Length: 627
Ligand SMILES: Cc1cc2nc3c(=O)[nH]c(=O)nc-3n(C[C@H](O)[C@H](O)[C@H](O)COP(=O)(O)OP(=O)(O)OC[C@H]3O[C@@H](n4cnc5c(N)ncnc54)[C@H](O)[C@@H]3O)c2cc1C
Image 1 (cartoon, protein in one colour):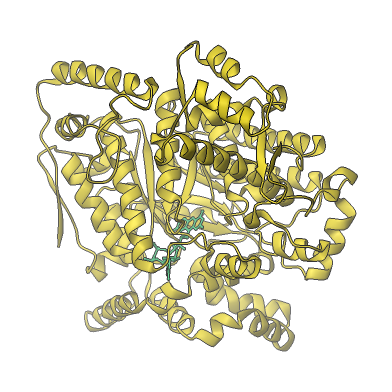
Image 2 (cartoon, rainbow, N blue to C red):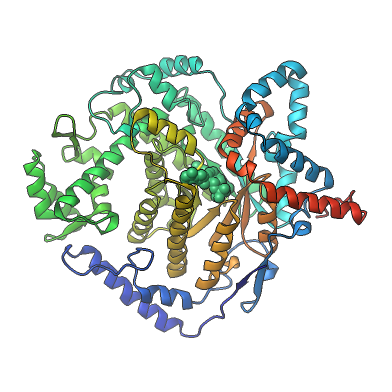
C-alpha cells in the first residue's frame, strides 16, 4: 500500500511572497553578472536553486481550488490521506467485462513470444493472404487492435472514452496512422516531391554525424524517411495531416472537459527539413560549448561568455561580425555576459543575423556560415511547418484541449523541440496549452529540461512537458553504430531510470516553486509512479491542483491507471485510433519498441488471472461495468 499525505495550508502566505520576490531578484542578479561573481548554489540534484526557495515551496499553500479538473472526491479535504494500491485487481479491472480480461490475457501472452513480435509484419501479411482482408480485420479487432486501439474514427471511439472517464481515466487522442510503404516507393515519392534547392545540399561539406543523411540519396531516404512516423509526400499532404489533427482536437474537445490531443511534427513538415534544422541547432549549441570552454569549463546553464572576450576570440577564429554590439544592443547592458539562452536568441533572429551565424568546419579548420546547408526554400518550409502548428495550437485553445507534441528520433528532435518551444512562448502565456516531450533515455535529457525550464521562467510562460523514457532505442543505437557517432542513449536501463527521476525531480520542484509548470509522467513503470507520488507528497502537490498528470498507453497497465484515477489523480490513456489496415503498422512498431515491456507484463497477467478467477468463484463472470 502506498500512501500520499496531504499538507495542511499554512497561514503565512504574505511572508512567503516577500521571500520569493527577494530570492527571485537574487537569481536574476546572479544570472546576468559576470562568470567570476557568485553563482547560485547547487542542490544535491545539481540544480541552480537555493535551498530556501525549495524549503519555502514545500511549505507553500497547495491551493485546493486550483484546477478545472474532474470531480475527484478522494482528495476533497487537505487533511485526507490518499492511498493508491497497485495490487488491487478488482479495482483495476472494474471497467472491463470478463471477455475483455480474457482478450488482454491472450494478447499479452502472444506478445511475450519474441518471434511473434519480431516477425509480426510477415505474420500479418500471411494472415491477410490466408483469411482475406475482411476476416483478418475482424480477427485483429478481436485481438491486438481491440486491445490497443480505440476505434476507426473519432465517432466510434466515443463510448470507450466515456467509459474510461466514468472510471476516472481521461484520454489523449492520438490519430495513429502510419504509412507502411516499401523503401522503393519512399524513394520514388520523395524524389518526385522535393524542390530543386532542397536536395542538392545533402551530404555537402561538414555535417554533424548524427545528422548525416548518408552518401547516396537512396541511403539518405532510407535513413531519414524509412524511420519516421509519417511519410513526406509534399506540402499538401502535410496540410492534410494538419486537417486530420484538427478533427482529432475537436473530437477531444467534444468528448471531455479537459482532454489532450497528441501530434507528431514529422506529419506537419518535411523530415529532411527537420533534420537539417536540427543540424543547424546542434552546431550552434556546440559552438557555444566550444567558446565557453575557452573561457571556463562549466556546463550548460552555468556557462557564460564574457562579451569582450567573446569578440576577441571570435575574431581570432577568423570572423568579422560585431557580436559584442548585437548582444549589448539586445540586452541593453554594455558590460555584460551572455549565457546559453542569450546565445540561442541570436539564432531566433536568423534572417537578420545570418552574417553573425558561423560554426566551425572541423575538416577545413575554419569558420563557415552556419546556414550554409539551410536554403531559402528550407526557411520557407520551416515557416509553413510553424504555421501549421500555429493553426493547431489555436484550434486547441478554442476547444479547451491541450496539445501534446510527441518526441521522435534524435536527428529530428532538436528541430521538433525548438518549434514546440516557439509555440509555447505564444500559447502558454496564461496556462499550459502546448506540452513538449522529453526523452530521458537521452544523455542530454537533463540539460534539455533545465535549459527549457529556465527559458520559460525568463520569458514568463508556463513550462509544460511530458516525460518519457523514449521509444526508439534500438533504432537510435543501430544508426549511431552505422554512422559511427556516439550513441545518444544512456548506457543502460538503470542510467535511463536515474535520468528520468532526476528530470522529474527538477520539474516537480519547479511546479512546487511557482505552481505554473505542468508535467505528464508518461510511464508504465510502477517505481516511477511511486517516486512521483512520494515527491508530490513531500512537496505538498495535490492531485486536484491538476499540475502533475500521469499517462499510460491504452491497453497497457490498467492496474496503474485506474487505481490512480480512482484515487483522484489526473491520469490519461494515450488513445490511438484509425482504420484497421492503417493502424496496424503503428501497432507493429509499438510492439517492437515496447518488447521489453511486453515480455515483462507478467505482473499484469497475474492480476488479470486473479480477477478472472475471483469473478468465476463469486459468480460474477458475466459482470458488466456500470457507468
Ligand atoms: C503516455 C505515453 C506517451 C508516450 N509518448 C512518447 C513520445 O512522444 N516519444 C517517445 O519516444 N516515446 C513515447 N512513449 C514511450 C516511452 O518512451 C517508452 O518507450 C515506454 O513508455 C516504456 O517506458 P516505461 O517508462 O513505460 O517503462 P520501463 O519498462 O520502465 O522502461 C523501458 C524503457 O527504458 C529504456 N531502456 C530500456 N533498456 C535500456 C537500456 N539498455 N539502455 C538505456 N535505456 C533503456 C527505453 O526507453 C525503454 O523504452 C510514450 C509512453 C507513454 C506511456
